[in-house]
Image 1 (cartoon, rainbow, N blue to C red):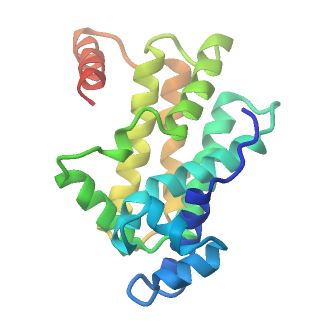
Image 2 (cartoon, one colour):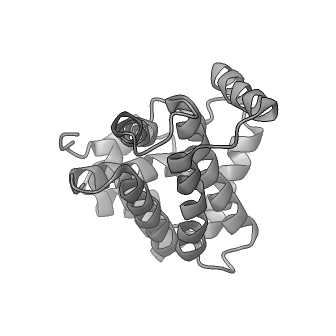
Length: 215
């Protein structure tokens, strides 16, 4: 994927979350964000009604990290290695730069909102990039054709969301990157060797298909 220039909105989002982590959400002002992002008050209010609106942009921050990683991608890595690398780098960034209380807040708002659930938005770069990598794995024969492309993407995304939710629920009492890297190996092993056959598994596969029609 080609290099994408950071937009003004992305600069504001990046600056805001950097300040939320270093200064704390309550201590960060809109003026601080404008100064850190090297933008203007007009630009800020063009995209956001106020500081609270930025709490819904954490998924944008994650996507920006994925864009950066895609630009540095080693073409010699296997699909499995790419997914392991992406997971480690994103979760390491979250551990080092994202306030866990704000992460928990984002999950809470996504659970109760009647509006768009950004974490499930298939137009996000996250889903586009993960889909591209898993497609490569299927086409090369690295991943078993036991599940479809969409099903494997769904499983991978579910794994990452569940890890982030549990880490936030446990208030960061364990290393997100260490535990996630350990557990992801088992998930990707199933990608490579296939999931067990049988009627139950066919029903589970259908559940994934139905879920895509409703999210």
